[in-house]
Length: 110
Length: 112
Image 1 (tube, each protein chain N blue to C red):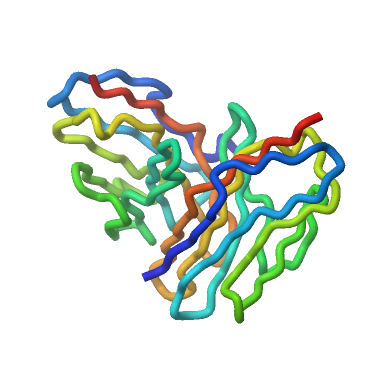
Image 2 (spheres, each protein chain N blue to C red):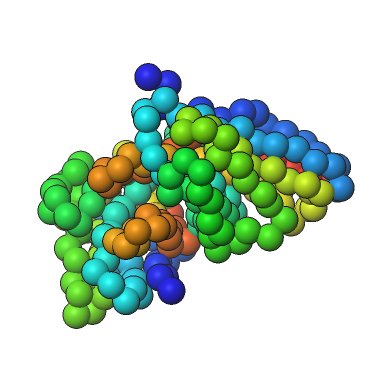
């Protein structure tokens, strides 16, 4: 069974401070991991995926298979980063099942 | 493209009533999903459909049924609504060999 754990329900940081949103997973195969973001009154949207190793809006995330983690990081938080962030894992087999974590609300204090 | 659309946007039901949540996508995607979002619980998968004609249970399927009517449409039915089904319901779709799931705007359901 695949599982995604986001240990923090709420993370509050000051503007300009570094941000790290934690995500740990359990999966028997080779994981495909994503971060999704939901801004206030908007629909959920993809932020980034581990395969592309990209940086979006200053955010990066590295897959650490040894620690089974996929933490989301940004060196300097902005007020517009305040949102709900979800880590997700997709089944790389035939079923295409996607499992989300419980989410972390990021609050950037001006 | 409208992307993923859901109807209705809001609904209030009484315990025991039934209703169907509709979802449609115009991106020719193969996979479609239904999630519920609850405070402190995040997004939980109810049912998904990897392709037209197939459906599978997710984490919390009890009390729900789904129909993949065709490639575009994936409906979620509550046969006898319960207060525990008060939630925000999201539909999503994903194309073959594509990473991204595209989400609908959600349906806010209240069961009294």
